[in-house]
Amino acid sequence: MSRMLTGAVAAGGVSILFLLLLWEVLGRLSGIRPIVLPLPSQVLVELAAEWRWYLDHAIYTTLTTLAGFVLSVVGGVLLGTAVASSRSWERFAYPLVVALNSVPKVAVAPLFVIWMGTGWEPKVAIAFLIAVFAIIVDTLHGLRSIPQDVLDVARVLKGRPLAVFFKVRLPGALPSILAGMKVAVSLSLVGAIVGEFVSSQKGLGYVIMSAQGTFDTVRVFAALMVLAVLGLLLYAMLVFLERVLTPWRHHD
Image (cartoon, rainbow, N blue to C red):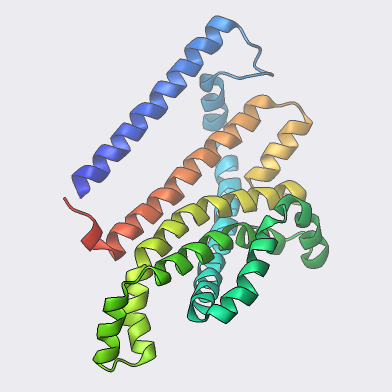
C-alpha cells in the first residue's frame, strides 16, 4: 500500500513539473506579457518573497473549508440516513434537497452575508451548502447498496436496529460515504472561496479579488497555485483516511 501511494505521489509530482516546464517554455517562446499570463518562475518568485503572507491567508481558507466540510459530513450522513430509513420520507425530503442543490450558490451567497455578517460564518455556511449534497447522495447510495441477504442474516440473529446500523449498514456504506467525502472536500474549498469573493478581508479568495482589482496577474496566479496545492493536500488527506478506515479494500 505504501509503495502504491508513494508511486502515485511521484507520478503526480512528475506530471505537475512537466506542466510547469511546458508552461514556462511556451510562455517564453510566445512572448506573452506577464499581465496576461505570467511565467511559473515569476509566480514562484512571488510566493517565495511573500510566503508568510500567503500562508496566513491559506490557513484562514483551510480552516473555513474544513469547518464547512465537517458540517457537511455530519449533516449529510444524518440526512442521508434519514432519507434511506423510509420511502415516504425519501419522497418528501429528497426532492427538496435536490431543489436546494439546484440553486446557484453564488446567487445566495449575498444572503448569507446579510443574515450572518461578514465574518467566517457565511463562508462556512456556503461551503457546507455546496458540499452537503454529495454526502447525502453517496450515503443514500451506500445504505441502499447493502445486500439484502446480509440484512436478513442480521435480523435472523435478532440484532437490534441500532446495532445492525452501526455493525452492518454503516460499515457497508462506508466506502460510498468516503467517496462522497472526497468530492465534498473539494466542493467545500470552492464554497469557501465563493464566500471570500462575496465579502472577506482575509483568505485566498480575498487575495484573488484584491489582486484582480489592481491587475496584479502574478499575485492572482500565485493564489491559484496555493489553492491547487491546498486542494491536493485535502484530497490526499481523504485518500489516507479511506485507506485507514477501509483496509479490506486496499492491498500492498
